[in-house]
Length: 203
Image 1: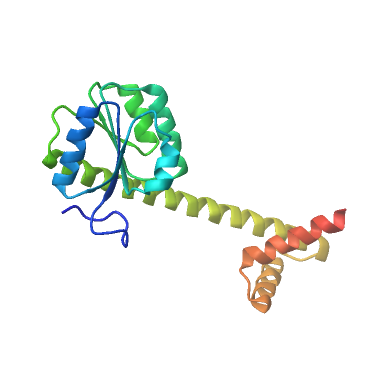
Image 2: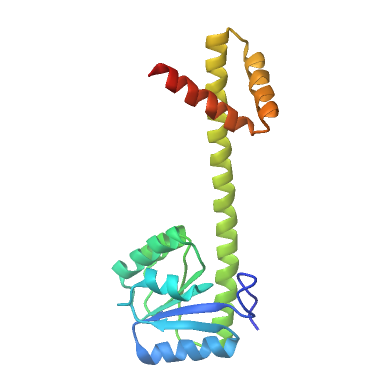
C-alpha cells in the first residue's frame, strides 16, 4: 500500500491521470490501482487541468504522453508552481532541455517504456520524496526572504527614530522593542506602523 502524501485524505494516494492515449491510460490506471493508489480521475490533455485539480484535489498528478508536448508541459509547469503537488511525467521520447526546465519547476520527469505496478509504485514514491524535498527548500527560502524583509522594515523604522528623535541606533532599537512589548505585537509590526505613520505625516 502506498503511503499517504497528505494525512486525513484517505488511506492511499489520490492520483489524477492525464493521458493522450486511451489504451495507455487504461494501463496506467490499472497499474496505479494494482500498486495501491486511488485513481481520482483520468482526463485527456484537452481537459482543463486547473478545473480538474480543483474538482478532484489529487495528491499526485501522473501525466503520460507518447511524445513531449511542449505547450502542454509548459502549462503544467506553470500550474505546478501556482499550486505545487508531486508530478510524474511518463514520456515515451526523452527531451533533455525540457526535462531540465521541468525539474527546475519542481516536476519529476521519467522516460518510461513498459509500465508495471512495481514501476508505478517506485515512481510515485520517488516523486513524492522529491516533492517533499523541493517543498522544504522552497519553504526555507520563503522564510529567509520574509526574515530579510522584516529586517529591512525594522532598519528603516530605526533610521526614522534616529533622525527624528536624535537617538543612537541602540536607543532606537530599544524604543521599538519597548513599543512592541507594550502593545504585545511583533517588532516588525510596530516598525511597520512607525513607517506608516511617517508616510501619513508627509502628506
